[in-house]
Length: 133
Image 1 (spheres, helix red, strand yellow):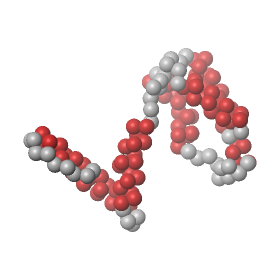
Image 2: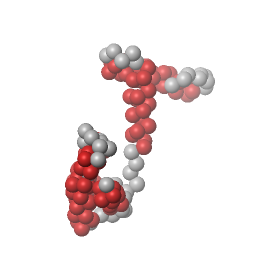
Image 3: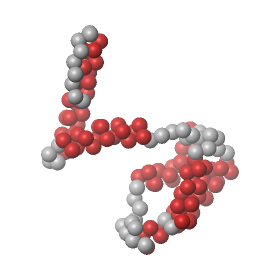
Image 4: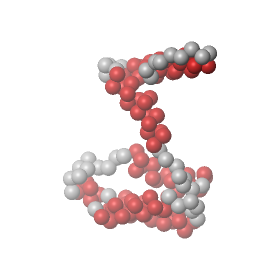
């Protein structure tokens, strides 16, 4: 288990560098391969008996190519995307009655957008309005 975590942390530390060269990319692939090999311990010990299937872990496989195309991802954070996901998907889903939830989530988002536009327009015109979004 420690070896799996060490390999994952190695991967993370390599990716966090401000610049990466081919040797770093080879080390990145090596760390990912070690993690892929060692992560079965989580399944055999019953921690994740159904296997590790996390989209972010799958995304690690695409880092090498993305770094070659776009450069080092130094300083990139997913927290902005997470907060948008919570506001655009999770909260509206909780509001739905769980029947045709996709349609309800989309409708809630459309209404939220219209309310936000209305509030922005009122603010521009100097007419303060307080709507809960």
